[in-house]
Amino acid sequence: MSRGKSINLFLMDGVADGRIKCTLANWTGVAYKIPRTDLDKCKEREDLKWSGVYFLFGKSDETGKEIVYIGQAGVRKNGEGILNRLYEHRRNREKDYWTEAVVFTTSNNSFGPTEISYLENRFCNLALEVDRYSVKNGNDPSPGHITEEKESELEEFIENAKLIMGTLEHKVFVPVVEDSSDDTNENAAGDGQKLYLTRTIKQINFTVKAIGKQTSDGFVVLKGSIISPMDAEYLSKGYLERRKQRKVDENNVLLEDVLFSSPSGASSFVIGNSSNGWIEWKTLDGRTLRDLENSEGIS
Image (cartoon, rainbow, N blue to C red):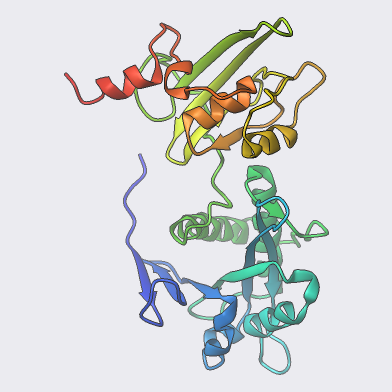
């Protein structure tokens, strides 16, 4: 069972949308969340002139999808490490999408070239595996060569960094839906249970068979669901765009997990028409999602 963690968030500018320094009890790592517009305020911070890894976060104007670029920065002859690298990215017009950076270094400047290469590689591959953000790295970073002792140490650093990243409101390492292989009770109420939607689209004689889950982020239509190939003429522009971007095979089987903010958004995506997800999504024994929520907390 996971244990509680004590995380310290220091609002460096006294405001919630300014710079944030983040530390974890009994950990030598240090994280900073820095808005792009506040880089100049960091010039006097010595630990931002050290080695570390950094993340540039933004959002695509075309698709609205979250973007991340992951890099490393070593100490140079002029003494400028991470901060200098962020300035270089701010001057680069090809990276004009990013609005804030998250930086990881250590309180004792213990990262060398081997450590930051390994961390950059692992962070990049973890982000690609989760696939929540569009990862802008052009090439797969080299992991370098490390001992098994160092690998164990860095993997512990990564686990803490993942926790802090989520605390700083970036879910780049959080899967859209957790592994469901341990599900034992399909009809039990609660976060993460499987729900089902089956409907025949009479106009095209096509049967939709979808599986979904309600999560802390919203509602996820799971990979493997069979969704409608037809869109209703009056389906809203937002849903039409989501369906246009869908990844399916030749049988209209969904090839990825797709997250929505509501059950109705998820059911409308599946059916290709406006629908009420609170009554469309059901357990195996026929209870609707509305029934489940109404029964929670009642003994």
